[in-house]
Length: 141
Image (cartoon, rainbow, N blue to C red):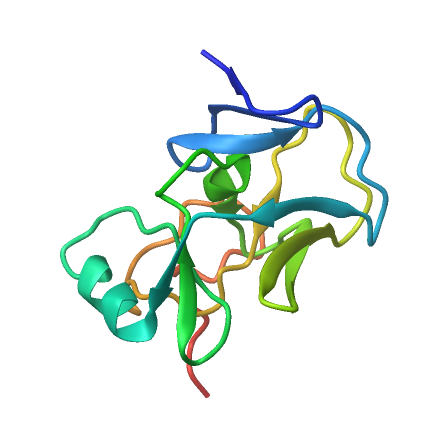
């Protein structure tokens, strides 16, 4: 069953993991997709909430602050990880904004390379990409 938050995005079952965020319109390359919203929390609170949690919806703004997207209704919180993503984020004046890395067609799932999360570095990836690195977190160099 799809949840519709706005005319541009919908949330429905994802082949990657659980539910995903899907485009209802064309998002051109470099075009704004959505803002990640939720509760503003400290990095200490983010670490506390991450302990023992299987699904995390916490995104860092900077070294001190994060947004917990599990609080409130926000379609961007359903953007799944992929090792070959079609979106990227930028923090602009304290706001986390998703942009299209390439053209995203209606019906396509919007994905992001999480790079570094509160998950264990061994947490497996389910993105099904031919270039999958096997884990959600990017290996440290």
